[in-house]
View (cartoon, rainbow, N blue to C red):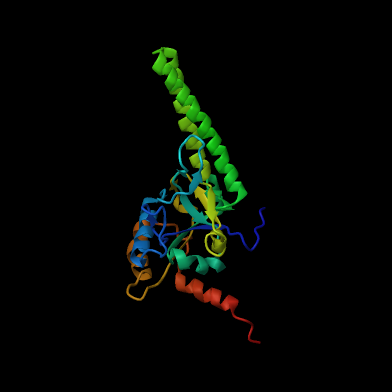
Length: 267
């Protein structure tokens, strides 16, 4: 039997209102999505029974000693979950909204999710990763350069085969590095209360889940301009045919419960 501490959770969460990925700036926006967009994203996940790969990429700058300037290496695309105890979801919601689906820990582990490795953007650990990739890239570059030069001197079938093999191996090395990088999460020291606190788990494959994998669904009763819980329960839930054992919890209930938990004893 696994005993979890107060910082762990049996439920791993996917919040649907996170900031959009700005491809032009290679970073996330600052603010969460509008509530209606987060709601529609939640419906899409539940209807398709799939948590798809997102647009987020981890980026690492690598200096290659091949005459090139610094190269930015992108990770493979990922889908993400957050291991946050129920009592602390309010903090997470400030950046990712109040719409979420939670999955059982044992289910996502079986599907290849893994906790990310957190490191500072200027840490020695990250520099060692960059150095290792730079070395592989440099050796691959000079090997390809040598084969190309040999091909220029003599058109030989064996050299062409050698070139193809070297090119494939170099491409495969980059692909494996991109997959490894998908499980590295960089942060600045002033992000300890935000990025680091997310306790993120990732997968490089879309998550096709079973309905029995779902532990809980959370959404607000309403926002200032729109009701969400009532149409979800009355119109959407009958079509989804979810097991009756899955709780559908109003976000306001979580806020109220957590407020009571934090309130000092009045006696």
